[in-house]
Image (cartoon, rainbow, N blue to C red; front, side):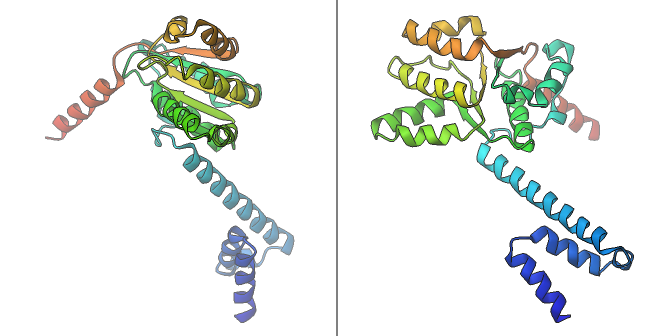
Length: 255
């Protein structure tokens, strides 16, 4: 058993954890031991590839910091009353728009599911190997302000540019301070050149111009976001109220 143990240990030390586990599994399965060497090797390579892919996805999901970590494409509720077209969303889920450096805008009233939908698309992007980063607009503005104050803006730029998809959630809450405008433009311009944006807002895109104190900055930012964007306008009742009512009905049904 020592040579076998050494083989497993060597695979582990080489970082081939998936192959090591697959090798041990083969040793415990007589039917697999009867297979040709090439077949067994192929199974181990497949296991290693699958293991690495799983680790990569886990790393991307952790780095994305999605607010709704359980939001997936399968969890999206498609109802005519929500103004949410299944074909449109599923096409976006293929993430071809990321390859074309296009953007997505999701608007709607509070509670209509903007954040959930944004995080579901972000989750899908991670699963397809696309580095993603989620920030609320408030958090992003805070980071921009702090980086300006302590002269660490280049560091923040490098952090953001690593994301192929930058999600900015709830744009427009509290307006956009005039001092922040140029730095937000810097971030948006950088992202429009190197990746894609997914922006949610309570305000329809036609009213975004009014959120900015500086009209010149407003035009520059909106031009980079809107002209190559897929737009989803969510409607209907608050999903929070819908889910709360559903949970209440389920509890009553059990009593």
